Image (cartoon, rainbow, N blue to C red; front, side, top):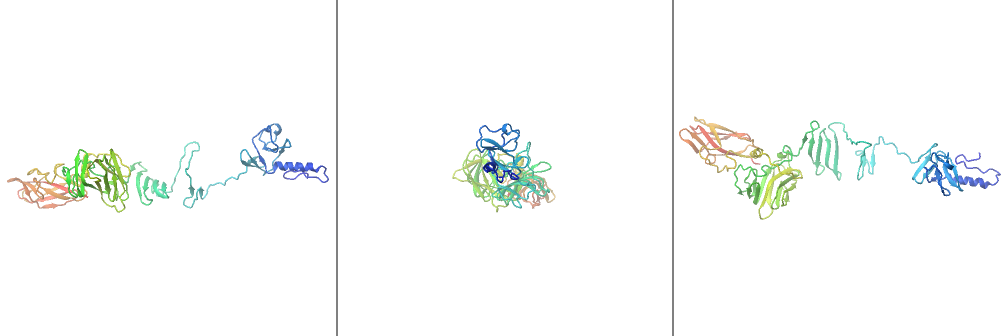
Length: 489
């Protein structure tokens, strides 16, 4: 054998003359093919001015001195090109590409190991550590899902309707918002202030597409206050002083310190004390206001005002346009809560069109139709005398009450009265005759005509729908009276 089996280096023969020639040839070959680093692998012709020792991998279809040498290593040695055919497994680093190649027996290819197939992979962490719950974990400023030539669809699948398929948004790994299919196949959006107590804000029915707002109930994003513009005035309040806890315009009363309130058109002026309206959570479709943000807004307060709702309070700043403040009642705030408006200075404060709504943003004023507003007021208070008339002083005269009924001349008779609007609870009833005398009625007899100041046997059957009055005046053929019914919170 005259050469080595792998690098094909020439052996020195015994008794060979000029052994240095053979040795130098072997060294020249070693210099060309050991620790191979080539400059380029894309040239199809020798460079014009190569430097001594330059090496190249010859590209296909080469010409000139490189013709027919595709894939071989060309080394410029002693002023001429020498060519070395690679053996399987030889490595070569290509300087202009920064890649390491390997000869596989027929061609040069990448020497970098191929990553193992990740299909399936039990856990994958990208700059993060995956675990048994979060089997894919990614820690990155951004995540991109790009199309592969057309559209792009991201899928979240669940096994059964009772499971959850959703996107959960967190702050410090504590949930704040969730949207998706949670517990059924309706689209739901819910939010949380602490990751523990969740409130559902929106539901889209999977069958009909109907949108529901669970937090706002039947009066979706509308006013939780009744008579927010003070236009309903069943008690005939003329404006001015109100004693402690006394009602003026419907649904509005003075607090325990009293108040002084006047109205000009839609502009209310509070000269002293504070105003209160009791708000029931049922108005918002809730069992409780605890933990629920509410926003109070009104028009153009002339001075700063102190607003409170249950135990939550804040200052509403004076200014033009619609001004608002958001309050969140505490956990102990159950049942109906008092919305309280008070001055913060020694003067007066004017404002108009109050609105209380669920959520942290104020929306514009919307007036309900007057019959609807009146019916809401009548759930708490109603009177038989003409609207805007003070029932306590309304004295139309004999036989001119708000209620007329036929009586039994031969003995006691019963008048059954139905309220025009069912009340929120069985009310307290006050009866007055045509001269505004309390606990008296007017009756008509053929012999005496109308007479005020007469008594009656009593009231019974008082409920949210109405009541009955029994009178026991002999010879009476007609009975007349006025009533007030009060079921305020």
